Image (cartoon, rainbow, N blue to C red; front, side, top):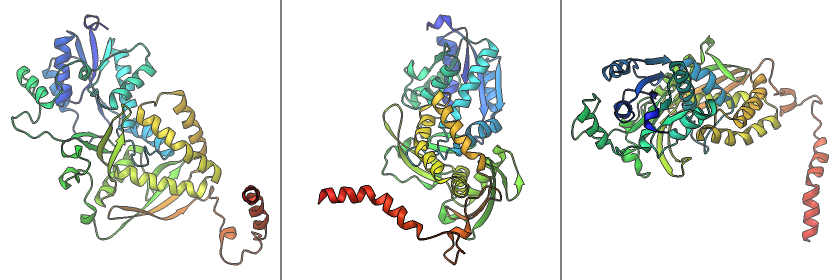
Length: 406
């Protein structure tokens, strides 16, 4: 790919330091027209200021889109049907947003007649892989520009100096300002990396957290919630219907008040290194707990166990950027088939960082039979004598092996 062959580029643009520098750098080094794309996926910031910054940089085609509902409905909810956790802890808040952004970059490139797309992901992280795998899956011949893999502006100080020399207005441009944490926020989570977090022994300062109270400062009285599930998805809170984005927004607020959803993780990046990150996922933490409780009542045992065996593979696919792949779609189809019976209500108790299940019911899909499970007289619903043969059959191979050992 020669630079002179690129006439128009669609840039994933936030208006922050990195993408503001990239915008000007593309104009200078590729001599191309830049189209900006800014997505509102619930990051909690005004996205309109990006328009003014892009206009000031001479951008003529500016796309700013509210993707919160699509993000929650088409990406977050399907992932939560799988109970996905990467390496047993990470709720995949950053990972799950990248396929949607890649999809819209490709679509806008087609719409505007652009030759390429560009992103601000560094050459050390996972996001470069996620963006580009998604783009190539949707448009195999897409040209992609990743400035961090081309330029020599490999520190924040160099980026700030470049911005200063070009008159690019960016926040925290004053000399001597301490670099902030690298943060990524969307409707599902907010993440923090860098600075003093690069030493895994350092405790995150309380000032780091933005969405959640410290559990010690959370209310002294618990809050009870009732979540209604239909087809594995939460559709109502305390009987009040809401959209997927509305559900996540409400659960983030309630969970954050009770100090729910903080996590401090050292994870294995796809590119090979270990990375330490801190995460706030209050709504997602509540959703996962409630969803597993609903499944515990309605899913067949072997279906539930097989689903749990598949989950780490599903989570790994999402983490590594393989959303638009046959294997993820195959797993999703199997998972979604199990969710047809995941209907009912789960009651939760939120208290000082904890999410406790205190009730679950399903009128039409519960597999819990009190007549069989009771410790009292069951009127013949279960013959305990049947257990003798069951145990002896399952012990047969153990007994044979035991005799062989002498």
